[in-house]
Length: 321
Image (cartoon, rainbow, N blue to C red; front, top):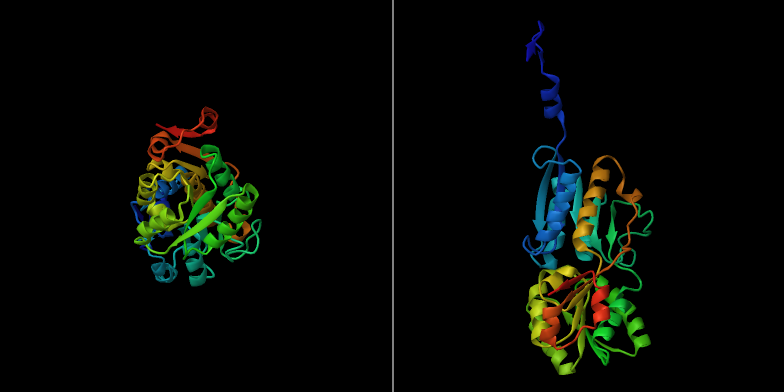
């Protein structure tokens, strides 16, 4: 360094730039556990690294975990509001609603949300306004398509259980859409509701009592966190099932059909980058899925006693042996 006569210190330009560079603070609120969301958070962090962010040098994170307890989300959201982070990343309708209630000013990016308009999070997908934007995982035909897939694998199916979390406000919206599709296919739906982790065993007991022939698991972050237990119970009860994310098929579930959740978290990093560079979240459209992946697990097919047609396998994006 160089000293001037006035006593002022002149730092070399590189050192000055390094010291003056802002470290952005990103809050992360997720409803599950670090283990259950590990692939998603890795995709998000990889996305930020690809955009040039370096943890500790240009970006820092404040993590909040719901530990599969919906009732904790409001308190965690309030903690992030008080910490005055630059932007918050989250996933799931319940967590998004908690954050939206906690802060009207801090930008929120929801990496995975069902129908944000129906949930009351935004008024418009193209220009959401306010402080929230993100990525929807719902398309109008999604529930019907999952029922169609079940019918292809189990042609004689007539009764289908629908597993949903009663505390997820999106569940009733999805169920309503699925009822319309089921009526056209002459399928009887049996909604099976859970609210706690302990409810899974009781839920499958109810399915056995109703003598359902197949299962659809509705979109929910808590059910995603409990995907291994859900898959194991479905296989043990020999219920052909279709799930909403590929993580279920990778854990041993029969099949999944939906957008790639890890891809959505990676894309969310791009929205965070744009917000940190000055874009208002309300000016970023909530993007809807355009591509859906079909994963099939052949080991699970053997366990539940179904034969997957060759033509069906050829359409799959991934077949797990």
